[in-house]
View 1 (cartoon, one colour):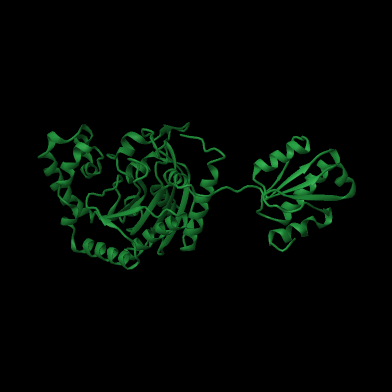
View 2 (cartoon, helix red, strand yellow):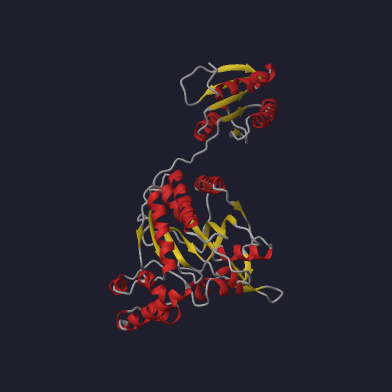
Length: 416
């Protein structure tokens, strides 16, 4: 778990604002649910044999003896909230959320034990058109952030019946190559064999590439769904690759699965992943409800933004310099008045005193465009000096009553 320092937070603001604006522009509504849930929720939804439930969850017993878990992902909590609050009764929902998740994984670049995700969940729409919209929605986030080198992989896991037939064939194949499997894959062979296909062990790749393909086992309904999704994405100009070995680490996925990835972060290349989970709502006690969603990882996206040198600085527009007791009092009041007048513009007030020379150094270091200066003479005369810190323009002096109008003109490029 890591601290997010002041020099990093502008990247977080950029990403959070972009996600919020993009999701809402598609008609999605925000939902917020607790960080802590009943442990049984994740065991029932994610799957008891998954790595998350077996090894990675932060689970504890509270003072009432209840077994609770810090949420390792957002979908299960979103479904639980929708069921408890009656949001899924006879109409669709298009929802999004954002916040911290927790998994006790081995820390490495782009992977922390507290990490942050933005997720989208859609309920009540069974067709491939909504699958395509979610992929386009994520793609628009990448476009707005200037992340044009992400690649999209698609697969279909079919229906539960398809997966059962495929699992049988896969286990038979892997048992025939058992000597070549690593320890982790042998364990998964009896619990979650599809996850063997997700192994990053170089020594396993030959076995994996020789495995049966789930796309060869799809029923007609799953195949039509997948074919139509690819048609829609091709028509929208979205490049993708079909990867028949793409699986998700959560048991609830079926039919469409997808993953956006980068080559710039080493082994932790996935930045966004999701797919359909049509059986999860019923599995958690609701009526049969088609559903699809995705989650994107903030830490990895921010690593990409910083690597490409994204401009996120928000320096002050005005730095208020005041020397002397009367000047400091006037500067404090003037800064407040300007903040009320110019909402959203950064106005930084010098605090801690200091000479004109030291305050000008601070003003220059802050990156401010303008310095407003009140000394003893200005304070006595009810005036303010305006100095341009980033332009070769003469300093001007105006009355306190004229400051707001003068700055308004400067903001619109109309003042000389």
